Image 1 (tube, helix red, strand yellow):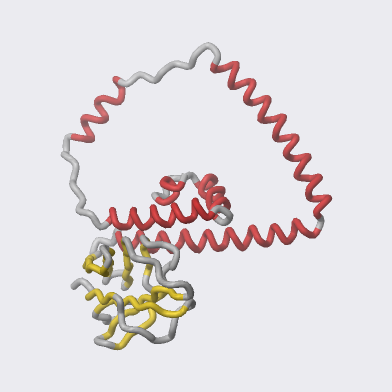
Image 2: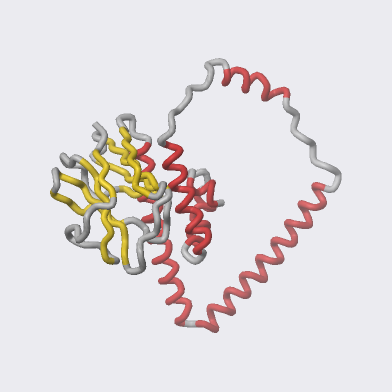
Length: 242
């Protein structure tokens, strides 16, 4: 479900269930982050307008495609599955009631943890939506620079939204206890713009704060947690697109 989640293609109920799953599954969380970065990079590619006649051709062919009728056992299997699901639901309810009675105050703690996890997942989704909004803005402009070691960094700016996104691809992980920090460059004066995820080599990050007359975006290596001002020379400095 990672791909569908990244593309906002899941129904609300499935999206909420998947976000709960993400909080306790590092492989899925990592894959989701990587696919988000990939989707951001694909969003920078040139779009091709489909032929004007394509929609008419598709709609003309739709009535000609017959749906496969259900087989003789379909109804029987559906009825059996329904009875089985109802039975399992009753057992699940009984088990939940027994567990709640046995665990007592522990369930309250677990509920609080679940609420915290949902809050974090909701925040992550909001940030992903904000990144997507910048990438899809009608006035979005991009500039890409080589970061060394085969890595690239792309800055996407929407002046209308007064926002920018930094899309990294193939960046080496920083040393233990270090993190990549992003900065808005104001003719040599650096303004903090957020931290990158030290565990991921591909990612799309919404820069903190407005563009506000900045001339570029810099990347430095800082102690974990970041610094109020750069403590090292930039490993990359990308001029903002005009």
